[in-house]
Length: 451
Ligand code: SF4
Image (cartoon, rainbow, N blue to C red):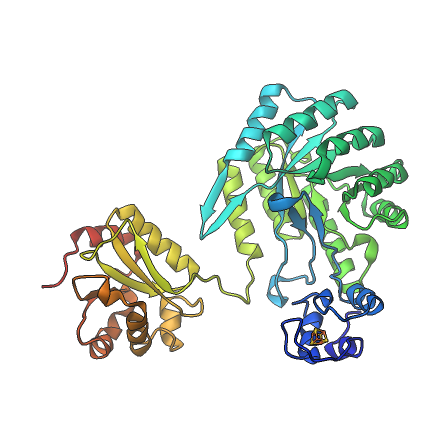
């Protein structure tokens, strides 16, 4: 049961010193209860209190890290069933699988696609994060050789080692060094040996059941052996079973605080079908329903990109709008004769508008007004994109000193604001731009400053 802010406050030193960057212990306790700060931020809290608070405020789905440094992949940490209740914390990781039965060319192709299929959208670099190396041949020498090859070929990949042979796992994990792979392959038959490898290396352990009940046995044994970081696989190899099991596991962990299932799940669409489109469909379903990691047979742009977009949609925080900073953004190297446009700081709007301007090739000054992440019309209706605020921002931004003309292009949807803006900015000519960003290139190519 999660602790309340008042219960947490009772365990704090109550110095009200502000060294945690929060002015009072009460405010700090409230933030710990809300999961917004870690109790360890208070330098004076006792170890005993830290343990009690940390245990009680830990998320029902444990946070598990795979990899190290900039390319560390984090999964789990979830606290709710539905995104609108709070938010989903860590996005589903997309992995591509290579196996010891594949030819060198097949492995190299997958590694190359892993490295190159990356997309920058709305300021986010979207890509697959993990490579799963599977010992399908049951040959330790081949497994370690494949592991070496992938480690060298994909320095940015978080690694999943897949074998049920504890000796082979130990040897491959040693090769990985500080890349801290997920060791996937603890079953009823080998869980003690696999737990030993996980404890020796400090890596997370993947537990696999023949069904969800069997998985509970395996994860209980792994926990009893002292392994804290688990990733769980119910053994489901059909869409329906994987969908059901993921929901059962999440509900058990979040609603009933059932620890054996309180870990991120790993799902294998690559083992459910040979049809790439069906595989993508399965991946899209389990991504929406709680998969911590999905493992694909291959990466192709037409499969990966839609999954990355789905990932972006599900794992943005619904309570925090995506914004860009208020500023004047130069696009295509503008000078004093270049057009001046203004729009809101909702990041989707910014990236669409700036992308169209960039694509037009017309040097431009793009003013981004802070509208608290609201889109143009919503911001205007909420009083955050009014003529007086735009005028104040224009002065603060000093745009008048950057151009030889006095023409401001406003979004087409704000046409009704033209009169008010002319009153607030009497020295400027207000021009109504197109309603749709897609029409900006043609508009800008024709643009000439008002006489
Ligand atoms: S650092 Fe600790 S004692 Fe000081 S205000 Fe924060 S919670 Fe209270």
